[in-house]
Image (cartoon, rainbow over all chains, first blue to last red; front, side):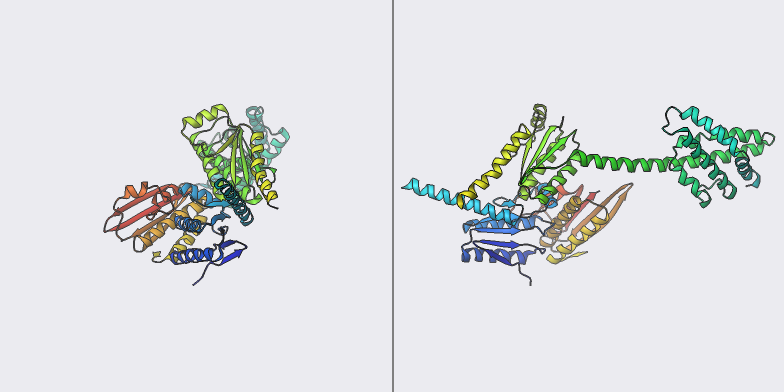
Length: 132
Length: 275
Length: 126
């Protein structure tokens, strides 16, 4: 059975989806990711869908689920590499990806995650000051 | 069908080729001289060639079957001629037939009929070929015009601009929007500014396409700014009930550019602070 | 073609893609009908207990189109109107995606009877 590889990039996890996903594979990916996020205390997950020329509601649900679980574990999710035809179709489909941020490619995605963690850190500092 | 009428036409065409050319030229010059763009000398050589080919074809081929190989070269020529021109040969030809077969009423009738059928069928071919060529030319021109009038411009690193000009119809907007998204991917732009200063009116469908494009771009990870919304268009959009609340809009392209720089510069500032 | 397992969803997508290319659809139009077919194929398998997909290339004068029909003999959809108007959102357990699929195609026909099964026919014109 094929598995989707999860790469660790510093404190981020990168998942590249290339094959057509089905139920079992999707469940497996979600389970594995959740485990890896806690193991590594990753603060971000990058899902690369640049190879996907079709994204239907099933994949959309899977991505949203991953994002939700990641958030519970204090990690952000960024989806990168969405193809234009896919984007247009998703808009027609009425599929939004709530709680999921997007970027054009992995580099941008990483920059986005850096940025948000800075903001989070800054916010935490502010909180500390206020509570003093 | 008796042999005589067919060969009568062929004979007439052959014997009086020169005279027919003169008559036909005269006919064409009076009818078309004002509207035609062809020089008289070109017209003459083209007519002469056509007549010659026609004459040869009738010698060997059956005039009632213009699709036969014998008429191949005649058909090829028709692509360059307009229908009215080939039809204009009728009068000189009929006149000649009449003169020739004045003592043979039956033959006259049959030959005239053959001739008119022949020219009509050829005329039909010219219309079809002509139209097809025209359609191809028009389609190509439209494509070129489309590409010319909607250039995607790179304003800055990561900032694209799409100045739209002219009235936007639904189909064209769709094509343009698709190409914008493609360019965003190709250039890795973070922000695309869609400027509609040059657009006089917008209908519901077009406005919806714009919104969908902005949403799609956002889904992909890029942002859009719409600039140049004239007061009239703003009114139309509100009247149509289209929701622009989630889209950044600016009055001018310059404002949009400034905002785009802010939006991308922000990130530069932050990363500098970190190092 | 038969729709039994998840692997068949992939097969349907590839088949619809090939036929869409054959019909001369633009990339966007291909993507739309393949995505719609993917939704309906999954429905047929997940909710319909498996079924059949039938493809048809259409010509109407100068127009060319692609029609895909999905049929199953499963439990059927009790309230079709509701299923169609349910605003699809991710994370929703129902996720029939019917309404969404309808937006992606030019013609959409659905007939379903509880206990007898469901038939959905989608058509996209070039």
